[in-house]
Length: 232
Image (cartoon, rainbow, N blue to C red; front, side):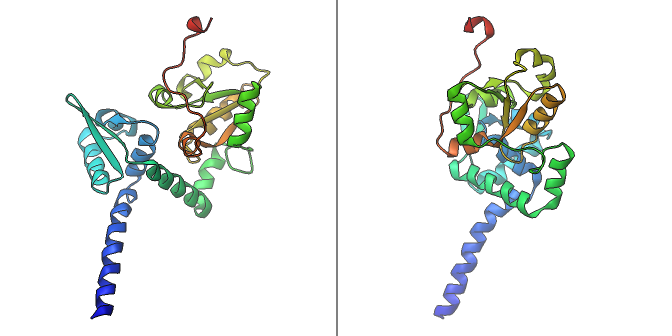
């Protein structure tokens, strides 16, 4: 009887672990988690960012809430979602690391945009921090503005990927650019680096992204980027 009890307890434990598994069984739920590791958002914004219908996004978020990987707060009539804790974002990072280590298809996608490990050396967090302090690098945050405002590397310029080519004139061609985005599996920074290099700029990616920067307890700034006029 004691043996049967232990078997039952193990089964119950794995059943609880499977609740987390239900979150990552759908690619859009992984995408939602990655977004929520950048900044909290209302469901309407999450639906737009992921290309989902509002009802579909809400259904995915309910599954994630039941697994307790996301939390909510209400502001008037709007409900905002956020990652439930740092360990949730660490899980997303680990999932990306595992996928890149074990799935050749993931590396093929990076290779297609010139961002495979063997094609472009990435800047480590410690190297970037030292160079930011020395002032010999331009750091570019290519995520959407709301993610930048929620937390960014101090001194980084907010330059969303879709605006990059129109604003290249803002970047000194004689100073190396380091771009970063949401994490090691985010394609925004690699795409930005490819465009910068084609325009003649020296450019590299950060080794990972903003969630990992936070997890390392490195300095984080918040708020919108000051305008050029206010900087004068």
